[in-house]
Length: 287
Image (cartoon, rainbow, N blue to C red; front, side, top):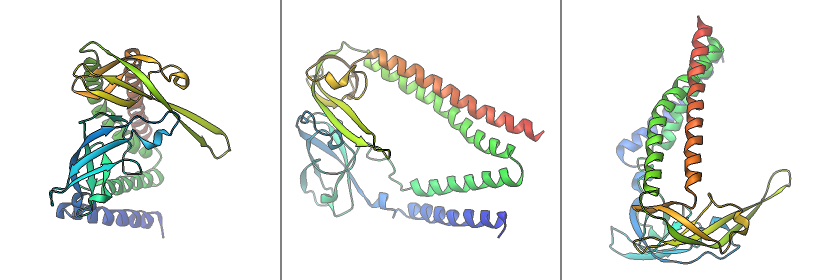
């Protein structure tokens, strides 16, 4: 079988997979579409134990109602139930997803409607078809086509991403500085130890903070960034800036936010220039 035959087999297999996936989505019968999605409410928040693992999330009690039966359920996140809860306060709404008719198989989700159409795998199959075409063009027509095939979508993605990301980051910083900060405190430091393939041991430390907003909401949250020497931060008092509309967006150090914005902008510019350079070099080599 020649190169064209392998390409046809590659594109045919993933094309069929994508078509089946898109067909199921249009029919509304994908697993994601059949799942029940409801908003739950955090009824109680417990403080994480100092020295425990960050993988457990902040212990909470959540209530939600099954829309098909009207039955109310009160559950916890003590075991593996979807996304880890890293910011919590009493009354906060949180997404809950579960198979239809099986509310006890609930999973917490940060974005309740993400992936609701079940198109993740079909879209990935289309991406693999594109990769196959680029590889075929690079081998059969010449390496410049690989540069163009890589550079064009990379550049388009960068052009679309940069302005949108800049607006999001600017709105975040504006919201963080829109009102006076509040006092917070580190109530625990979570410790996790892992070993790599070489047998080297690594230890990570995640501070857990509490603060009360100007509106009287008591927030408990992981604070992975912005704290110097997190290992020894237990009991430390902090100054917390947060967004009034969503206390889950906060920082103990505005300077870190500004540095992060600068680094993100620089990275985005370099990534965009990389895509443009790939297209230009590929086009020049074809001349």
